[in-house]
Amino acid sequence: MPAYPLKVLVLRKTKLGETDLILNLLASDGRQVRAVAKGARKPKGKLGARVEPFTVLDVLLHTGRSLEILAEAETVASHDPIRADYDRAVAGAVVLDVLDKISVEGQGEPQLFEMALVTLEVLEVAPVESIDLLVSAFLLKALAMHGYRPSLDCCAACGGAVGEGMSFSVEAGGVLCANCGAGGLRLDPDARALMRALMRARMSEVPGIDATDVTRTEALRVTRAYVGFHVPARLRALDAYVSAR
Ligand SMILES: [Zn+2]
Image (cartoon, rainbow, N blue to C red):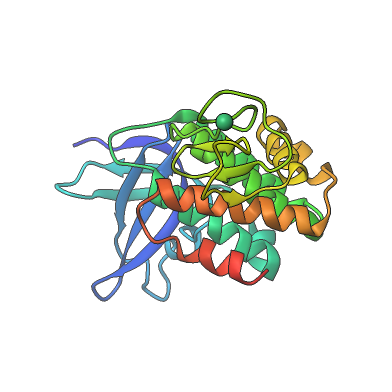
């Protein structure tokens, strides 16, 4: 079998046997690809240092029986500043974990890969105070690409205008007006406005969005609940991120 080239983002690595690694990769077409990096944990293995999470690689893969085999890897972007800074690393872990859980083998969403790369590029340089906004924006955009764009403009139940007394329903998929909103999550108008701004903004614009701590935290909590409802897997990095706030 000839090797084929692919641009990938390393999402996760898992030990396999004595010296190998299994890599969960997000491919440039948005599919998840799982590959074995043979010998990557040998002390002098050249591959080992290159296949860290957050790294963007140009790889050559061989088709294997259940997993692909990594033949070569060349670093496109290492994203070292994310790994080197605690706040960036924990936020970045949320991004990788969510990508790992929503991407699937054999079914791609190319926009997801582009958005992931831009998110990491901005995360690398953004002011530390703006990192939680980046996390919320990433989650909202990733969910929208995954088919669950939250309805933030009008009531998700009756289609009417929302105002005082609105709430957010993960089941209904968006904001609810005061009449429809029994049992929804608290969402005040500022947090809703912030979530709309995060959905609309380019990633590079997100750090410049102005919002109070209370509003940002409320938007993050509602977004987390929405992600949790639509992504069945346990999102440990996101749980830890939100409860640390
Ligand atoms: Zn309504």
